[in-house]
Length: 548
Image 1 (cartoon, rainbow, N blue to C red):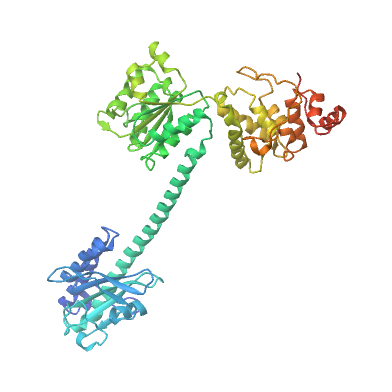
Image 2 (image 1 turned 30 degrees about the horizontal axis):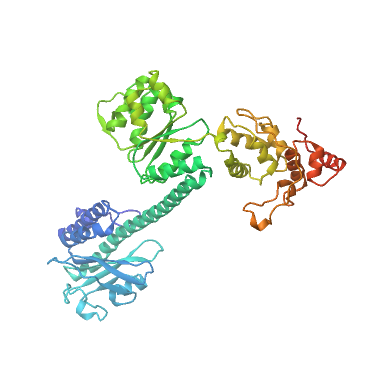
């Protein structure tokens, strides 16, 4: 049978005269079988160093290509390293390298062309460093190339059989080299992607650790220094931690600092607000569920404990869980074991628990609302976050830090004035740091020019009147001051705000008014002005006088 071009069909069974002899047809069948088996071996792993021996063994046993050798090029493509050679006698292979252009193998690396030698003894470029090849037999070496990348390596072998089949052996080796090249290209592509992912992961870990480290927690007062010291100690160990304190004091920040400064910092850190879910959903969220455990459970789902295995689980508002669920949680804390909802297989996990609450757990235990054994299990290491009103001296640093966050969020520079800070320090902050942050964000929104001053703070929330604490002691009118010792003999001789020329006239006037109890005559004396001059400045500087 002929096609339109007059060519005859190709059949491996020898029909139509395509295969001249049964031996010729068998040769090509063996080639196809060898190619198939090599592709199967290369598909097992992308690590050629692991599959090279199996590929060379197939060439030896099935392809009649003896003493097969695979070389790989270095990153600079100037040198070839032999990764494996198939030897009948076995034994270890010495490390052998070829430079570009050196011998037959080096010439292939340089030029990228296949070389077929009918008889090794007649080829002067053959170096015979391995001492495994018969000098009276042929030798074939082909490049392992992928696209336009250039040779990635060299595949070589010594065929056994008639010389007339050398071209067919070379074609077979080129096809096998092409399979090896695809395997190498894919492996290197995946390795590059994995390197990028590892680099990105390490960068993110460093960023997260820096973001949740101690530098991100503002506090210089004695109560905060005690908390920092406790966190540094407890972070080293896997003990359960209970963080106590009012809402908005920064308990979650402390939990972050504990995890990211602990040996588990590279593992999962999951968080769950226990007050946000009812008992049935809370159980499924923490322990997971099996398929069909309840209506809507269409697939198996892992819970937070399973997901956080080897890491840390932060349970916020732990004091809000019901007594019924407390007993289920107690078993996980004691034994590290649980069952998914709807399942009967016991799962064991290694999870560090950090819990937080703003409730008085001791009173809850006395009233029977919280299990005593769970309380002692959670209260292994307790940290207490002080309220903001107990560390007023931290407000200036906190305010500047929070204004920086708001500035980044709004994408514009913001400035916080001293008069605004003084007003912030007069407020009791029942909502703690969270209330302070909300107040500053509102003040930034109301500030058109990006300057958060006393008026912007007054409009945003807190006023001059204290809320939640006793008012500060009234200041006495300014009196003539006795002569003071030289400035260099005083430990803290910074001038008062109204004498500071760097803060601006408006801030100086406000500072003097505050010092004088908002009496203009007294403030005028502090500023060495007349009452008329200070009244004029109050008007042109748009200062809102406080009622006394």
